Image (cartoon, rainbow, N blue to C red):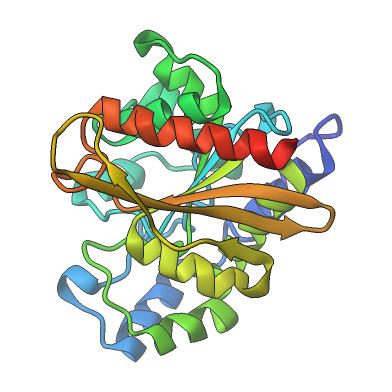
Length: 280
């Protein structure tokens, strides 16, 4: 029985909590095991969960604190699978409430600056809200949401396009992840959607079809290193009467991508310009 007393929460938050609670005790261990056997996935490609008996994480960030048009949504392909994370969760004996709160408060309680700091830098530039270093965990928690197109973790991800398309339309976990994404984009209303990595860009385009208008690559010189060319793609999602800005880019902090913070700021300034243009 759901434990959440969210009478004062926004309807979309209550819907996310309903999805969370209704799927908490489902047999995810058996389901993911069957998926791995059916698809022949093993080794680094084997799909996993935070712990064998737990459902996938549907989001990272405090959905209860978001204000429309004042936050950024980061969309990636899937989470990295790590044995230490699974060992941690096996020892937590999660309930619906503690699991909900764990993912809401992840960046406050378990800050990982190596992964999250570049996204905070980018999002703060894009939405025009400063994030000092000591405030980054708070910013990542209350001004950002992080979701995955594939809800299952892995060490590598090499599913053929036709298999991925079938999972998106038929698999329970993928369908829930898609529902969560549509609620966050269409109802919670981010200021911008940031699509992280070429594989995620390709999957995001397939998932949103005609709703998504995403331009070709925009190439430009790095502000940090002579002779280096950066690129990203930008456009918008049509959600009813709204046009939600979308900025898509290769993985941050790689030698040939937006690596230096000045380059991330460069991308953030262009994202900010897109937000202002679409809002005018």
